[in-house]
Image (tube, rainbow, N blue to C red; front, top):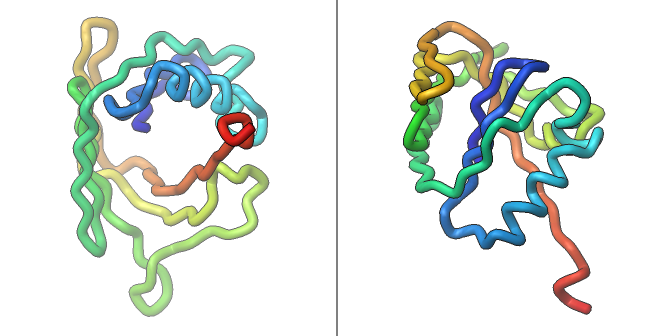
Length: 135
C-alpha cells in the first residue's frame, strides 16, 4: 500500500493490484482503527485504487511509485552511520520504523498536484491477519 495525503485533511490509498476487493475493503477498515492510521474524524479518504506499485530498494534508499505519485527517500544516519530506528511506538503500524528524508515527493492527479523534497519519510511494516478465512 502507498498513501498520498495532506495530514488531517485527505488521503488517497493505492493498493497493490493483486489484492482482491475484499482484501482492499478490509485494509481500508483496518486503517480507520486508532491502532493503525486512525483514518477517521477529519481525514477524508478521497480515493482507494488498485494499481501497480513499483518499489526499488537499495541499502540507503527506497523509491516507490504508483500512477500519480513517485517518492524517493534516503535513510537518515544516526551514530556511527547506522540507520535511525524508533522502537516501542504506540501504534503497531509503526513496527520496524526507520527514519528517512525525502529526495523527491511528486504527485500529480486531477485533484491535487505537489512536488517537494527534504521532508520526513519513513518505512514501516503493518502485519495483519485474520482467523476468519481459516474458520
